[in-house]
Each structure stands twice: as structure tokens, then as C-alpha cells.
Image (cartoon, rainbow, N blue to C red; front, side, top):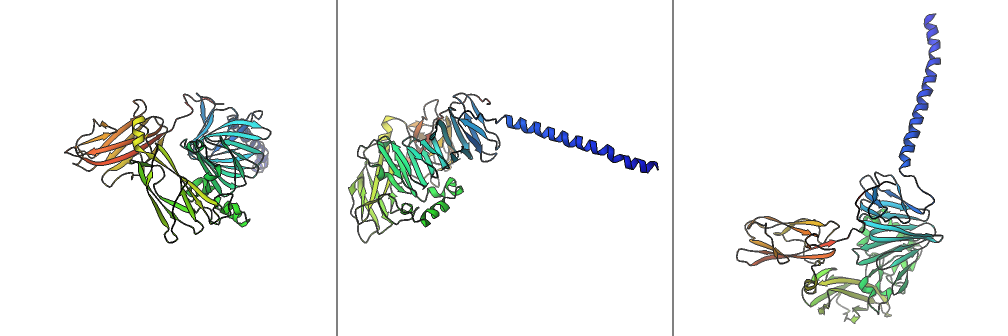
Length: 465
């Protein structure tokens, strides 16, 4: 009887303790949730954008002022308020959004939120690349050389390249491009690329800078992860002629991603050491009936597809070679710009360096680091390392400075480009490296470029909201 009594009483004791455990657990979870959420509490009275890193590996900062910033840890979100200094995505990526827009930000991107009104938002993009989907209202995005205005349902990609070119790619809709010399409507399937030197040309027609979305950019991860192929396919199936044209004023039939003309030489951002160069290109479409190079008409043969201009003059430090293609009706169907730099002009004025067209290395003289040429950095100090053939090189000269720590006949060497001793400056820095043999003969000459980008925000400390 006693055992039966005990068994019958046991449930009455266990049930209250179970509920106590459940309630305690709920209270703990609520406390944890409130604790976690308190760090990302949003002030809804202030206009803001929500910033969310793509992954734990992304390095994303919000700078509230010149001297304070927060890193967004993990995949937690944080607000970028109107008036904050900037948002910088150093590695990985991040999503930026509000009720009007969704932005996919690529690495090495910096933007600021500078305006908000009943009609939309205003952003300023200092560098990098973003994909923007306008889901409501309007937006203005300022780049160095242009401002692009979007409206509901527009989809674009923007790129600010090393403070030189501002580029807009339109995937859906028609957007307005505003510049210091006027406005232009850019249609879906096209891109426009504008530099400061373009805008300094008093005779510039903005439409001459329009082209199709080229194949190289479609390989970018930002394009791929936002399903650009599906967008362009939908445009094509809807019968939009703009999807297939490189200029909105024409009705050509070259698909997006292809070009009417391909410039074979010089390469874009090539360094030229002579006052004259060879310009060589190929014709990729029978629709091309005339090509001009810097408004100079060229002679096209109905047989050949490759054409050459000998002794094309180079006139200044930075030279834009602009080709324009025309169809049988003498309507412009394509424009592209190749920029070359004249090394002879670059030397006397300053030590700025420029991207070069020579190979990054030879089989005997190989760069160890950095891993790209040109090399883009925000660091104040860059160590450049090479390997050379054993028992061959007696000494090395970099921009007329003989390296003091290189041992004759050694196989490796290094050079420090340093802001503090002015061997590197903000902007484009060009280094000429000469390798000398035992008889003071030049064995090999290599050009190397460092593009030093300024850190617009000097971050001396971190603070929390």
C-alpha cells in the first residue's frame, strides 16, 4: 500500500517543477534576446539604411564621424543614419536597404547616406561597386563624374573606378545621367563610362560614351549573384530594342555582351614610351561601315577584318583614344574609350605611376608580391619583392635609386614604397626597376604600378551606438 501511495503522489510533485523549469527558460531567453537586440536598436525618428554583412567573414564598418566607427560583427545588422560619415565594405559584401531600395555592395566599396526627402534618398559613392534595385520612390546616387537618378523598378549597377571612371550599367528601366555638361537618358541593356577628361572636352556629346554591357563585367560576382542573365533574357523576350543596341538612337542587332569593334592595341591603361603608337582593331559585325579614331576617319576594306593606324600621335600624360563605329546609314552604333599614358610626360612632373602594358614579370624576373600589377591599396607602406636569376644581377635601381641592401648575385630583393619618405603618394605611382649585370649592362627593365587610394575616413577609435 505504501508503494502504491508513493507512486500516486509523485506526479503532483513533478508537474510544478516542470513548469518552473519551462518558465525559467523562457525568462532567460527573453533576457538574452533583449540583450542582443539592444545593441542594434533603431532610432526610427531618423532616416536610415539597414546594413547587413553577407557572412561572418565580411569586414564592414560604419563610421559616424572622422574619428569613430563601428564594425558590424557576424551577420547582425546595424543602421547607417543620415549624416553618418560613411559605410565601408572592406572585404566580403553587405546588403543595404530601406523601404525604397535594396543594394548589394561589393568589397572595397564606400558610400555615404547624404539626403532624404518625400521623393527619395540621396547617396554618395566614393569607390567600389554596388547593385541597386529600386523597389519604391526615387533615388539619386552621386559618383565622381555623374549623378544617376532612378525610379521605381529600375535595376542598375554602379562602379567608381580609382577616382577616374564613373560607370553606370542599366539592367532594367531608363535612368537619368546628370553631368556638369548636361543630362542623358540611359536605357536598359546599356552602360555609360565617364571620366573627368571626358567632361573637360567642350565638344563632348554624352551619347557618344554609351555602349553595350560588355562581356568582361558580366563575369563579375556581383553580376552573377544578382541573376543578370535572367534580367537581360526577360528584356530580350519582351521585345525591347534597347536590350540589343549600343546606342539608344539606333536600331542595331548586336547582342548585349558583344561589341562591333575590338581594339587589339594599345591595351587600356598601357604605358607608352614614344610620341607615336600603333592603333589596331578588328571589325566584328558586317553592320560597321565606318570607324573613326578620335574623330579621324579610317579606311575600311570590305575584305579585311583587322585594321591598323601607324604613327598615331600621343600628345599628353593621359590620352583618351575614342573610337566610334557607324552603320550604313551613318548612324553611330558604338563608342569605346581606351586610355593610354605617356611615360615621357609622366617622369618630369612627379613620381606618379601608371598601369602598364608590359607583362607582370618575365620567366627569369618574377614578382613575389604584391600579386597584381597595377596593385591597388590604401596602405601607407607596400613591400615589393622580386626573384632574379642566381649569380646574374649585380645591382638594382628603382626610379634612379640604387638599392643599398641588395647583395650582388642574390636571388631575391625587396623595395619599400612608403608615404612617409615620399616614395609613394596618393594616386598613381609608377616605378621603373632596372636590373644591372656585372659589366653595368641593363639585363632587364620592369615597370610596376601602385595605385594608392586615400582613406577618406581617418579612423582613430571605435565607439558604439
